[in-house]
Amino acid sequence: MLIVLPCLASLTACAGSGTAPVPQNLTAIEHTVFIINENHTFDNYFGTFPGADGATTGQLSSGEWIPLSFMPDSYQGVTLCNSWDCSLEAIDSGKMDRFDVISGGAWSAYTQVAEQEIPNYWAYARRFALADHYFTSVHGPSLPNHLFAIAAQSGGAIDNGGNPGAGTDCNGAAWGTITVIDEYGNRSQQPPCFDFKTMPDALQEAGITWRYYADGGGFLSIIRHIRNSDLWEKGAMPAAQFIADAKAGHLPAVSWLLPPNGESEHPPESMCEGENWSVNVLNAVMQGPDWNSTVVFITWDDFGGLYDHVEPPQVDQFGLGPRVPLLIISPYAKQGYVSHTRYDHTSVLKFVETRYGLRALTSRDAAASNMLDNFDFEQTPQAPLHLQSRTCP
Image (cartoon, rainbow, N blue to C red; front, side, top):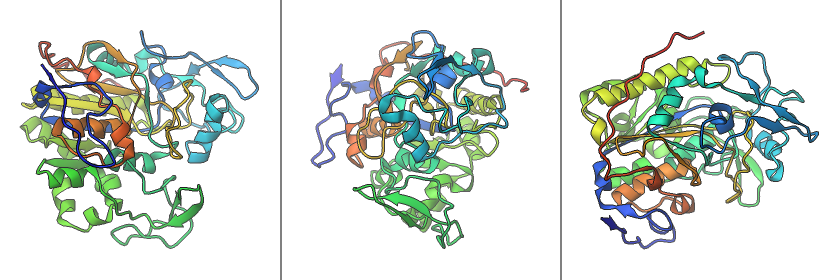
């Protein structure tokens, strides 16, 4: 049976608007986990995955097409730029042909990972679901994309901060400043401490449990009203706590999880070590009592300067940015399904809003797809897929 949730009165529209019908038994999902790794594109990781919109060649700024070369596990000594300006340069008004320019004229961005380098990610994609039109919310890089992943906006931020200036974070620690843009594209500098409504705020207001698992509090640390309230002590947890909570059946309704330093897959960090971390996390979920009521979304925060061939739709001045992979892992995920529906980081927020009948935070998550095409709540729930960590190069 399908039901359509009523629209909530606000200019940000209703959580179910313009997307897949909402199944009545969506309530089978009691735990949503959003894992955000770093810096790989869809073509880089899954460009040869069967049934996916992938590429094995890329176009240079000269017009020449070249094969995507083998990417070693730890990609050392290369120039990769994933800044806001580099992203726009590489996209080149949709031509996707200037990734060599942002790499200093080199071809270091034109690489592809073989299945045997990330076999467990491919195993999850074959057993569960994979999305091949999931874009980053912002042209680049990490910080603004992570803010979109918790708030469907970045407060105008377009870089990772650390620029010259006397900016301090929400705890008073020296940081430098962050570049922000206004509605006209004018740039200015401000301290790395923002104050806008986030999904944790919306969940707290609705009495829905949440936690943000990241060493040092991750990007939640630059939200002033959270960092300087009891929400910080209640909701900000170290990454390692997630595994303990999953095994014990103590997962909240909604959680964000960021990998520790050295295991995020950010080049030149080892892809194998990062995949092993993800496997350990997923094994903890699948071995714990919450598996049968959980969905895990695994994505990568930005394109990392690496090539992808699909033009990102430009929905506003902030994005969308280049494609990154998305794995949808759940007992209710369609087995071997490849979704071609357009998503971005705010689509995970839209899924949560749809599940709990929450108002959208901004126009971005209001317009996002709710991701329900990846699920079949009438199927026999899929069994856990326990995988083994690998010995890394």
